Amino acid sequence: MTDQNMAWALMLKLYDAEGIQPVCLQLQDEFDVGVSALLTVMIIGYLGQPPLTLPVIQQALKRATHWQQTVIEPLRNVRRGLREVTPADQSEAAEALRKSLLSQEIAAEKIQQALICHDAPATKPLTLSRPECMANAHANALMYLSYIGQANNKKAAEPLLQRLVEALGTL
Image (cartoon, rainbow, N blue to C red; front, side, top):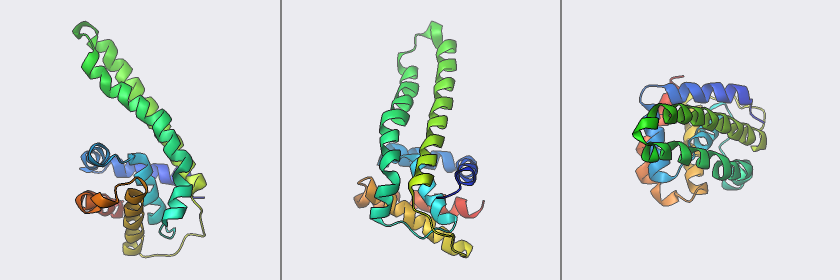
């Protein structure tokens, strides 16, 4: 089991790194990536766990994927939909609701990360160099794309994944 508190803190730092939010949103919108799941599996590799195999990632993400589909995505859809249906005279109230939903979405992503950290088999972290940790993070990102059925899009997603790996290596 990966230390979820450490993984969450690292994920927040990564997401807040310069230029990373647009990369994450592009991966989410173009490749159907669950950003918190992707970043979590990358961080697991970065923290010294061996790269995840497809059977291991399937085990690690089973509950997290269900959580993504039944909790995170509905919250996100409602939050995003508010801008499209809000009457002009209710924009202030709708913006407060949107911010509340965003906070709930982030809380749901933290729960999802805890599920992944709990369900991913862990060994004693390996003592690896920074480049080896970055390589494990990258390998896990590619395995995640295979898991979500985006294996054919790995080449198109590669520049975005590489930016995430590079940013992770600077933290």
